[in-house]
Length: 389
Image (spheres, rainbow, N blue to C red):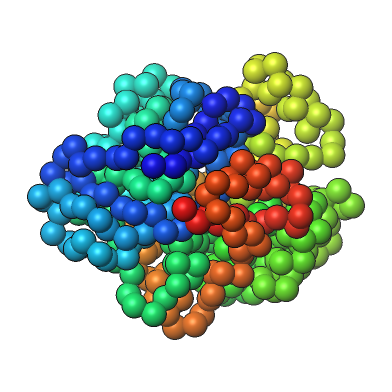
């Protein structure tokens, strides 16, 4: 089959690789009909996620048709259309039983690697390095889905791939980011980053009752999308002082909740942003936390900080004094996708949101390297790329 494979930093190729096979009774094989390039994939593309190996298959946002089932999989049938959560979860451990699917105890065969850095291992992830299990990803013609009896979600008739594809990751991720804000009537929510996750965080904040949403980015088409589709008040962080702008817009109080939808490769205009660029380039710092610093300083006293952007390792110069003395509440984590699949599908079916608004480019799988290039460098007004095997 054809698959998008990692060959090094800024080097992805469409290779011919062996077809996946059933290796466990709880496995399924899915013929992929739609897959997407995620902002998190760019961290791999840029070379910042460790333990990648040449030839690893990328991608964790995918859906398709079931073509083969292990003997223990009874919840779906061959021929069913399904979406596949990017987190791999067993469905029966301590954490899965508490709806903390992204913290599954049983799905990462390389848990010992993560424990050395993090103390405990989160769930395995599709196409996201050997640190998180070494699972082949879904930017391919076929994929093996382990724990398929809990990891496949059947799609009702009448919905297109494009309407439901983002249930695999970015729609639940944006929604969980907003839910983590404990939004109350009248709340003002600020969102850093108007990429795909930020766009869904904006929409979700309104769905959960926010009175106002203020969003920051530097890319004009992203700001326009946040304004047009998200009804957010938008500001270009290269043109304003973020902290001062938020004080002025909130009567001096600051936003009640702040969402970091940027993560480890944030850009900025101040000295600290340049400091991060240099330290990351020489691997003295793993992540560039410009957005997170601004979030902490900008949040209202007693406010909530929600982190949806991926962080990979160790951060420098975090203003924890401000966080502690302002009494901020932090919530973060990889998304518990399984928890949100059914309720978010209902929002789509009820016409409350049409996730297709985020798609700017649809390409054949063979053009995936081009898709990565325009997505990373924000060429051709690219915000979200869907690939068709």
